[in-house]
Every structure is written in C-alpha cells, then in structure tokens.
Length: 119
Image (cartoon, rainbow, N blue to C red; front, side, top):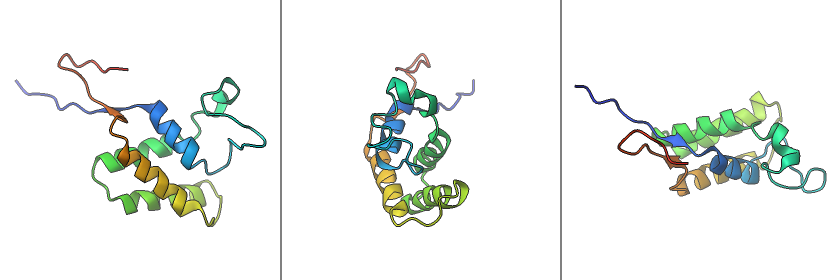
C-alpha cells in the first residue's frame, strides 16, 4: 500500500495577522481612516484582500525558496501587480513579513494520525 504524503495547512488567521500588521501595501487598515484589525467586524469585507499573495509567499518559504526570493516576490506584487509603484518601504515591509513567517513555528498545522487537522 502506498502512503500518501501529507501536507500542512496554513493557519490563515496567523498569516493575516502578519500581513495586515507588517505589510498592508494598499493601506486598507489606516490608523486614522480605518483603525482596528483585519478581523474587526467593520473590516471583514476586505479581510481576504492579501490572502493569495501571503499564502503564496508562505508556501514558497515552506518549500525552501530563499527568503530573498520571497521578499522580491512580495515587492513585485506590491509595486508591479498592485500598481503601487516604487515605494521606499516596500522592501523592508516584505522582509518583515518573511522574517515573521519564518519565525512563527505555529503558522503551519499538520494532520494527526487519523488525518485530521486541529484548529
């Protein structure tokens, strides 16, 4: 019998905490105009705005892509794909996201022996 390789799942809430507090390239959460956290009820309509980029970055890191390459990916997403143009803080914010993602040992969850994931 062939054993199926198990893959971890990302804890999206942890990734959002990182992305919204350290990256937030289009400034949707602005302390003056829209204070709070991504999970505040008033902000839930756009809470998933950065998910695909952050999940892609975290997945690249998990697969062994170099942190510098992932930083470059996030900078390109912000400056080119989102059309935000060159921004002095783009690289430092992307570096902060990569560092925080790598440092969080609880961001990935693995299935137990029965294949169930814990929340």
